[in-house]
Length: 129
Image (cartoon, rainbow, N blue to C red):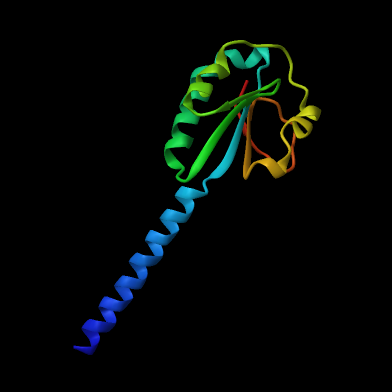
């Protein structure tokens, strides 16, 4: 009987912890910024980028996705994701990304590009030219 009580108590603690974590992360999701390079060369990779975004978003839980281009912030939510590929503007100025999208505003910052520039504090996803 003692083992059954111990097992029930352990199971209750485990389920309580999982429920608590779920409620906490649901109430306080991480902000993820996804920036797309709008260089002319990337217009041919829109399908690949859209597939990558779909796969990434479906694999992440407890995240709020914010979308931007290297030129401007678009907003959060799927409706803004669809605006990412409307226009190719020209070459990206990588030096302005840190000013436009500071690290303290987002938990994660992801840049989709084909340039080989290194950025600290960013996850850079390269698409081959």
